[in-house]
Length: 252
Image (cartoon, rainbow, N blue to C red):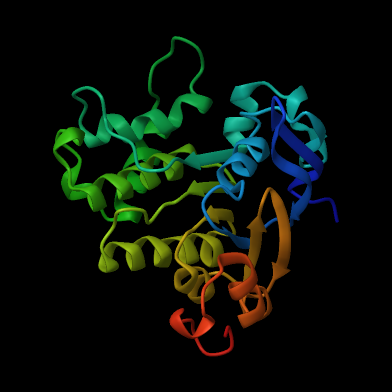
């Protein structure tokens, strides 16, 4: 079966500094995978390569078997929705208007929002649980509320692949769990393919059946969390005593 999204022997470098070194990774439609590793491991860079934002120095990235560099950005956006690491909203927009930006890849030029776009926005607000915030100024939201709104933008985009960079950064435990439960539901109920960069190993082990572990621009382990996040990898990659890292039973 052709992977829905794949990187084959990808290398990214800035001058003499190698960020990704000969990385290969493929995802089947409907998979849910977390990318974990220490700071500077290359996780966010790999996401930018997989989404076509960054062109690798060497290697290939394919979307449904086609080179992603051959596709225009709107075509990619109809297939891949990206939730970036938490950012500030720079100007006054309501939450409904912000979420409506997710429909841009589907809007015919100059036509404005259609009923189908309005329906998609309302459905995204409801699914994420932020409809009560629809008329609020997005700049006035709490950190947790704002992160949920960015997930709603991606849902309104209606892309089959959802890519998230640190979706739980700066969130309290309740909002972390809410975001993770939503991702599980989108994957299991809607069939969305999900890849997320996470720092929290417990969240990765609890909510993702596949975990890819990165270090120094390479993938050093890829598989179920019980094997990827075993004691040897935690000690070798993160340089900490595994006893200090609380993970679910079976992933220790």
